[in-house]
Amino acid sequence: MRILITGANGFIGQNVLASCSKEKEVELVALQRTASGKSIPEIEYWLYPEINSETISSLDLSSIDVIIHALAAIDIPNKNEDEARALYQKVNVELTRVLASRAAIAGVKHFIFISSIKVNGEETSDTLKPFCETDIPLPEDEYAHSKLAAENHLKTICHASNMAYTIIRPPLVYGPGVKGNFEKLIKLVGKGVPLPFAKMRNWRSVLAIDNLTDFIWTCIEKPKAKNETFLIADEDDVSTTGLLIAISEAYKKSLRLFYIPKTPLRWLLACIGKNNIYRKLYSCLIVRKDKAKVLLGWEPISDLPSQLRKMVEREK
Image 1 (tube, rainbow, N blue to C red):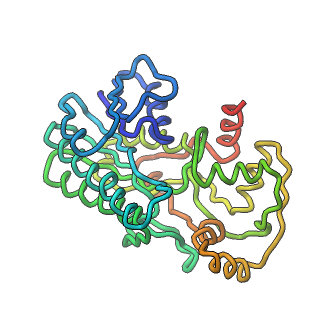
Image 2: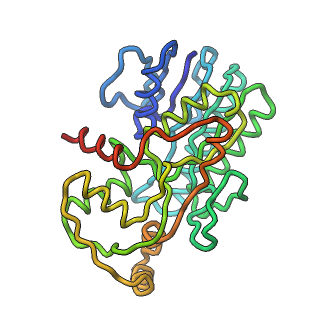
């Protein structure tokens, strides 16, 4: 089996590449912008200074059986709303559409797309009902809209061809090498500054990178994963308070938490234009995990404490 992994030098792509390289009778091709990190001798690297629709159109995909599409524009600093929208459209939507079209023509059998839980929405606080695969999508920001548009293009292309799709909408993914908000929380705990996150009773689903890579391989192996969308997460949801405690214990750092009532804090953050921070830290976002278990027999192989221990070991 010959597998192409896009975005192979990103956090998710690197881990998927390393995980798949341990499987037998697999040939791996890594599509990435630059050579970064440790190269694996058994892997074929396709390196391009810029990956765009023209690049994708030039690729020979005739020998590829499975594509794992992890390439995406996620966090776009120093760009206004119009610039961000244009980049999301270019990378997340058009590049996915072109890649899927070329893959279908070339005879690729299976296209696995890493989407986002943000397609479902930003929070489940109002109803306390977990997100599930059958929910009507409620994307709010431009990134979420771009992921939904990419999903729809992929489904249309697959329905008109012999290529199957699997769409995975992960929540916050964490593990060795993670960036973004999770990395920021680790740094805050490391500094030992007092944080206003005591007694928080919000619940959020998170996903260890080991669980994501294991589930991707399950989707490759199990025919029942084809032409399906999955929401997956760790077995246990966690509150922001619980997450900070787990981080402090793993990194052996003293944690200083204090309590501020939610209403004045929400008002304060809204006044300085940071209402999105309140939602990410104080709201609930939980997903149902039963479809992957029932349909594919998949169970998470890792949890928050064990994945945090791996992160600590890697940083030594």
